[in-house]
Length: 439
Image (cartoon, rainbow, N blue to C red; front, side):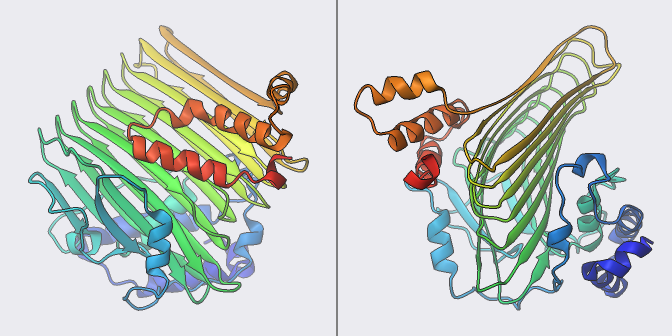
């Protein structure tokens, strides 16, 4: 047991107490126990941990958090939060999870045959272990989630089924008191199936209330299957969001990820792992983070090439305003057996705020000798030539800077496959670049 953390972090003691009282099925007991022991060994991460050296969460852990969510029922501000997450003109199936719990309702028509949705709490009642038993390595928060989760969303698309309309999942987080919630989700796209998922994260908190979301999503994309995954993070101040996504890709599968983080949440940590477990898989990871205030946004990615003839492409861009802090750490790992790997990674940052900072660390770790891999990182400010060009044509300085920010982000936003979502994101970017930010 991590005695130091037990003594200095109130939340640690609550977690130990919560686990001791947790009622589990026989099928999940061993996996939970293993995960909890792993968390006890790891404790909460500090800047002494390599993967957290630029992300100091000590100040967030000083607050006390309850581990029991408010009783079931729609919060009073639900309609307002849903309006914030609404994407105009998007034809989709819509579902809402409040603090990680789905009420079973679906908007946008009846789901087509071949896709099933369940609450994780219901799926857990079935025989067998729902989740894979990962050892969690150095994933502190994933181990904690695997030990203490109570609900989430299970999605499965049957083989050879193509779901034409995207599934829009709105995650609403709200509480009248400091709270930690730990949803756990499992998505399975069977052989030769196709699915598109758009996730929106919003929160509504009163006064000085804080909410910590420790979210874990496991995804399995089987042979010849395809998943498009858009993640829109627009949670409000007072929210601490740790989002962990682990993707298992099988032969000739395709996974496209688009992560957009906008001003609001105090802390956002995205841990995204794409594990290319069989040959001829393809992975694309795109990200855009626009940070403001005292916000801390950390994107950690791992593209794990395990087999030959695979392709991955990664592009993350950051725009940092005011006193905000951005972190990007992307690793491409190529195993000895992963010959003929093509892997590309790029991180570009525009630092606008005089007190804003960015720590960028792209990495390649290669153990195969017949590969084509590259990585790069840039950090800069506005191009004076571009500003002069725009201002010479009668465009004000603030407007010119806003145009340049939108142009900078375009390389990522244009990748989105849904025009309604692309328009929504561009509008959100423009909304968060008022004159006082652009100046």
